[in-house]
Amino acid sequence: MFNLLQTFIAVYETRSFTQAANQLFISQPTVTTHIQKLENELQTQLFVRQGKQVIPTAMAQQFYPQAQSIQSEWLNTKRALTQVAKQNVRVVIGVSHSSATTLLPQILLSLADLLKNVDLSVRMLNSEQVFDGIQNHHIHIGIIEKPLSDQNISSFPLASDQLVHAGDFTSSTWLIRETGSGIYHFTHEYLELNHIHPQQLIEMDNNDIIVAQLKTGLGQSIISSRFIDESIPYETLGPEFNREFYMVNHVNETEPVVLQLIDYVKKHVDTFK
Image (cartoon, rainbow, N blue to C red; front, top):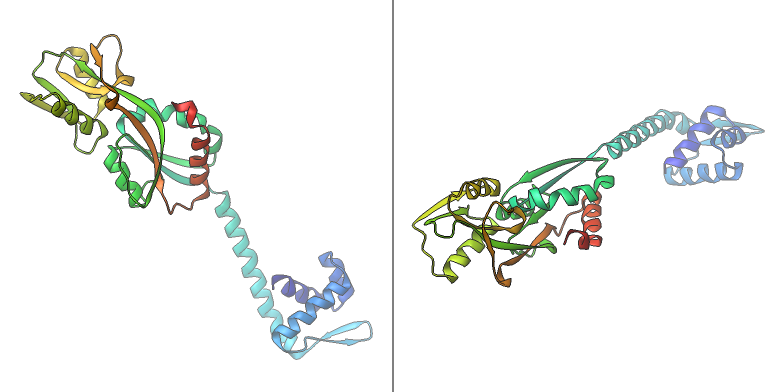
């Protein structure tokens, strides 16, 4: 329809099918076809030929300012949409505490070229909070360490992580993560399996804080081997404490950039193992 309006305006202003064709870089028969289609659409005659001259009808004179207005609005809309397309897309990534400082840096580095036109926001939360953020569409992409599932959430294994028992094994104090974190789940599983009833539980909402206490000799904890160095005594645990990190997103996610990032990670997932 826009092409028909464009042709009408050109013919109206030049009073010539030939000049209109030259102005629009189309053939004269195409100009004729456009005008005929527009006349059929409006069910009225727009031009009368008088020799080589084209005379607008009264209906054409009435329609001309309206056609100009429609054309102007269309061009403004195109420009506005083009500007929107050029703007950076905001993407929110929610990551669990364990993945934030160990796995996320690798992933962001691998995605560097795809993130050039992305305004990225990274939020460090526990696994359940990340999962809730995905469900509520507050987070686009999540990395969690707790096996959670929902029919509206798509997920795939991202990397393996071995948990260890670390710290002073004779201590009556246990350092644990908060409810909702992946390690909280595994810590209580370990305590139940080994019939351990700690005299003192200290809850901490950050792995780095736990590691700092372990380095001073305070307490013991279940923690990712990724955080352990030579200064902290530890023992490896059985295969039941070898967990997975998962990348998650909402099944109804439609943002092309988000889907592109997820697809890239899927195709290169072996590099994060």
